Length: 271
Image (cartoon, rainbow, N blue to C red; front, side):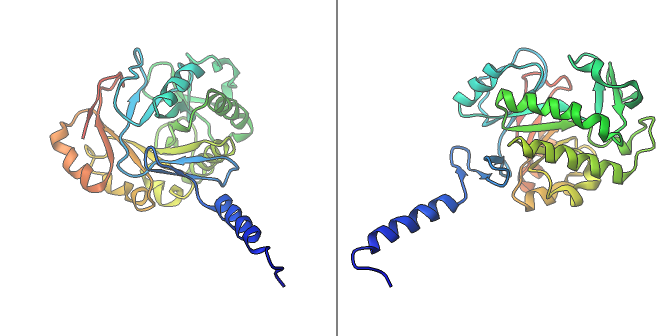
């Protein structure tokens, strides 16, 4: 039985409970957030504009709500500056290849280093050796989290499709990619699936957005539709095609498309 005079108190309590359970929204950029990991995980929506810069002096004046920058090269203050300008910031890391120029390069056992991946100073990793790689990748993701990044772009996530020097299988790749996604989520960061188009149907639920290179040039953009259908952004770049060649299709698919130089400097031409 409800005592006389207690109804306003009960209504206030119900309102408090409903407010606490309601999903959070990042209205500044129209992007959803998620509380599953105990903190807000950013979910960029399809067609969200972005800037991707991994070389040269960082241009923080680009009018884009999302910046994807190198996690090692930039300090906490850079991330804070971008946040002050209402930008979300993605931490670029190579998780599937070793780079001889990184400060932690000597911590990787020689047994996990494979063939070169086509870039100077880089070699594929034996992603089957999660016993060795998980602590190293955890430390890198800790760095991104401590610097305040909102998300991670883990690169070289499709070694099983390349000549790595190891007998990697699709199952090995799925296991490793899901490990990286879990480690990012445990630290309160969103995570993007880089390329790895053939495994999108099985991984779209594990990742919060996609990052793709040259799907238009190789007529592969339709493979990214599961991310768009799930309400997740596809951050897409072309290097060789003119924007006239891919932007109309990108807009139809709701991709977040740019033309960039291979060096991934500040220059961009958005659709």
